[in-house]
Image (cartoon, one colour):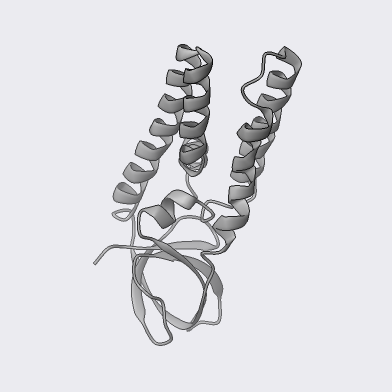
Length: 171
């Protein structure tokens, strides 16, 4: 299981497109420091996710055989609904609305980190990875994140991101 810091960086990376949207809105509102800080946080998450995926594959890859697979990339689309928030709530001169927005974003971060939702990350899709729900030859069901198509009978080298999430090691 990734550390708390790693899960936080993965969460930040999932909101990278949102941080870009917020940074643009902050910039045109004249809040240059807020724009720079927001964009820096999103970029830090993106760098953290990339580094984690590169380094974690060396930890202890294992070989598993896929018995069945179903693509689950669509789950990221429901996640995108939270991206509508800045169009509704920002930019705002009202301090109470701004505080409410950041409380909401904080709740989203905590839910993401504690709900084992690391695979629901639009940046993974943008980086060419796909999400599958697979049944392994041993009968266990897992989430598989892979650049390649998961299909019955395919053997893959993976590392375990969490109890239920496997990430294929690049060939």
